[in-house]
Amino acid sequence: MATYTFDIHFTGPAGEATIDSLYEAGWDDATVSFDPATGGAGIATFDREASSAVEAIASAIATGRGAGVAVTGVAENLVPFAEIAERTGRTLATVDHWVKGRRGPGGFPEPKIKRPKVSLYSWAEVTHWLHDHELAEVSATDVETARVCEIADSLVRAHRLQHELPPKDRRLLRRAVA
Image: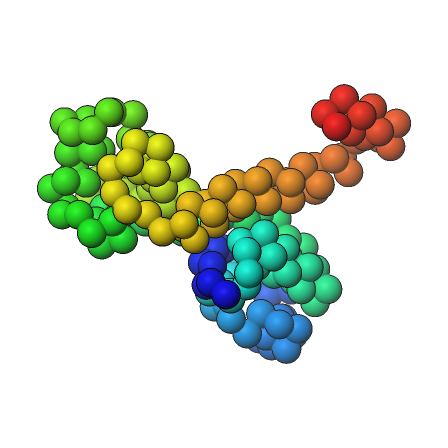
């Protein structure tokens, strides 16, 4: 068994009662929080043991839905320079060179959240880039989690958005993309 780290975004009634019901339903391996500005939008950060990333993420989604929250997305962690350096065993200077294209093949992923002092990068995108260019040892678990998060997020969003179409159009699109 490996430990998979990922985030589940969800909506539901904000408050301790929801957090307690999620914990009791099986989100006992997650830190759950709500954004006070958005009311019912929440995020759960998991460190889930499972035999695969698919199993870890699928079980978290199913458990959340079973506990009454609407899962709206799946994401890996957003990380700053320092964490990229720590996770890869490289120096901050090396990471800076990758980002600015002074070393490596170029094309380092753009930050998801650009800030003057500490920008945040998608660990999934960074993992893909590092793995594809063989610039740092990245755990197989991180690579697997990054890929599955990307796919799971697309499927969750597609499932949610398809209900905005009339049933006939949904069927037509499902056949077209199958």
